[in-house]
Length: 481
Ligand code: ARE
Ligand code: CA
Image 1 (cartoon, protein in one colour):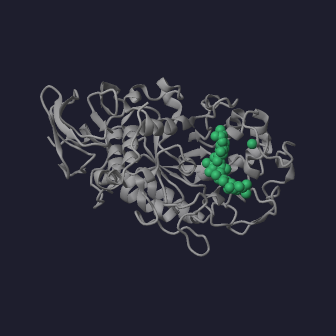
Image 2: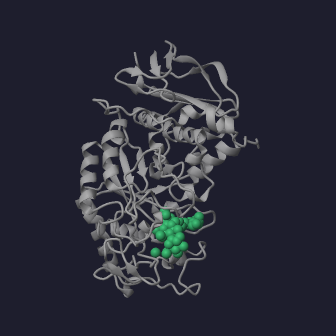
Image 3: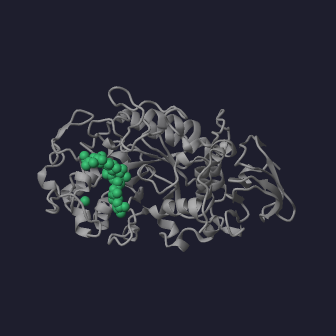
């Protein structure tokens, strides 16, 4: 196995500075609509509702994101940590991220911008506070008592480990009936509990929400999720959080009948490839690696948990992170989610907020990373849209860290993650002859390109120099002539 560099300062600074540059966001282009279906999800983790709304209007819609995923909107326990959102106190749409009215207005605004809304829905459990307390919106609660919603008989008491907590992930009963980090575990097999959960989800659907990320899905039997889904007032996109764990009895594949499932191996494998293996191995990335069937897989380079745990690439990795996202957005496996983070120093640190823990408006590049706006990532969303439905063709690799492939007739991506530039090489794209914008280094708008132009000749070839740890991407949606 090849040793990979211990990311030198030179690499972090100069070389890839271009890759993480934000795109200049002037006025949104008049005729945005990228061709094809818009599938890419932007996960605006912990953004408040007014900020999500304006991002839909100014960036997500015009630049071709199909969906925005927002953090849990229900009333939660008080505190400043980000994870208070994962401890529901009631199903009122009232949180540090905004009021019900602000949420409704955000959904309307995003829809007007052509962006659908996915809500992170916490339905496996309620709070993890032994002493109870008062929630964000003023509801009082006990650990197993949520007045008007759930009483003690609506929770599991698994009788294991002395405290009813999950200790052994190799035991199916325990994972689904004990408490995930002390969070009061709902009896999701009961009709009453299912009706309450469905009531919450249906309320969100009535506000126009388009889909749900079902938090902690592994901790609910797939049949319980099916029972809840059957009560939804209309169809909605569903993606379930079932983390693949080697040797665990509960498998992601059990859940594909309910909707998509997050493929957690994807980000971990991609990080390993970029850090210590060979990009050449990506030739059959996805199903060829034992991952979920493409049509059921929801993928990401990192999410809000894995970026705090390690073992994946995150915004801290700068240019390499941009390249990994470029690969994800260029490669036709699963439905991609682009993570957008706030900057954090320790695991528990909450988002920028005021003295009452109300989340502040997002200010990109100051306290907030806004990876979804980095030029490479943002422009590769356009690549993803323009290449929908086109298979991989013309794969090339040098056996190591330089790869290239086309999306038949629609686009071409080459990534050079070698420590050296590859100069003067020609690439066979099979694309129509013409002048294309290199969207890794420039923005295409109003028919012109702010960066290098790549000329594909009448036989489908182009010549280019690709610097170390860099890439070139062209597609038919960013063609000058
Ligand atoms: C917090 C405190 C706890 C405290 C609790 C209750 O940290 O110490 O006991 O509050 O007071 C998030 C945070 C938690 C937080 C929780 C509630 O990460 O720190 O607890 O919110 O506020 C498993 C689950 C998976 C889960 C991960 C984190 O299977 O579903 O653990 N991910 C989701 C969310 C999280 C969220 C929750 C669930 C809870 O994405 O952000 O927690 O709503 C193996 C297994 C995995 C397992 C993993 C755990 O890999 O295969 O299944 O994931 O280990 O490390
Ligand atoms: Ca459970």
